[in-house]
Image 1 (spheres, rainbow, N blue to C red):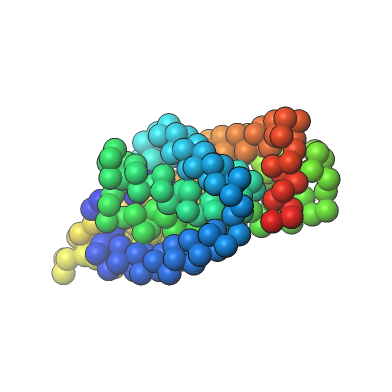
Image 2: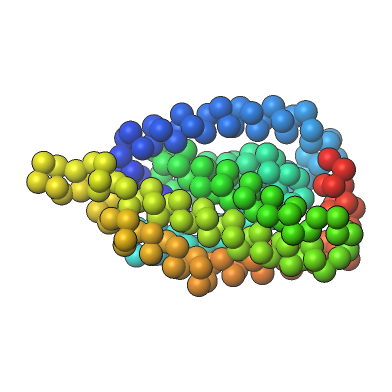
Length: 227
């Protein structure tokens, strides 16, 4: 799902940077005011977990990759604003040190994976698990469903961003200047792979970790209800 350099036009890259800057500022303020001191190590662990799980990526036709993100799990444990910070850190490190995702596309990648994915997943989880006890199986199901929908919606946005480039940036003769694939190809490639494969990986990982925490550290799930 990482968007590399050269696949989005300058206007698109700039748009997402402008969009994300106030969101990053707001996320930092909210996390600073709401995250408890004992939860700070969890934020670092969440960023590290997201970083590691995203490194296991598979190329997708069209120039991007498919992978799990772990963003919904971080959002369930620490809240969506903290997840936004954690995933942003992971994406920036990957882009700067490993070339996984373009530097010019950090804004777009963070919009998809650090904003859309954790926020959508978190509120789906909250809706399905509403008033369920911390140890209830409904929470495990909710976590899996949230992970699956969250990552697939993020992949859909990435496919749309790819597919719009030939319409936005092209020569007088119609030749694409950046991503050469239109919406039909880009959306099907991105959404199809995640619907069939990577969405299930995200769902299973999220559900299994929540199930494990219910038995080993239920306070992590209960604390999120109070925060």
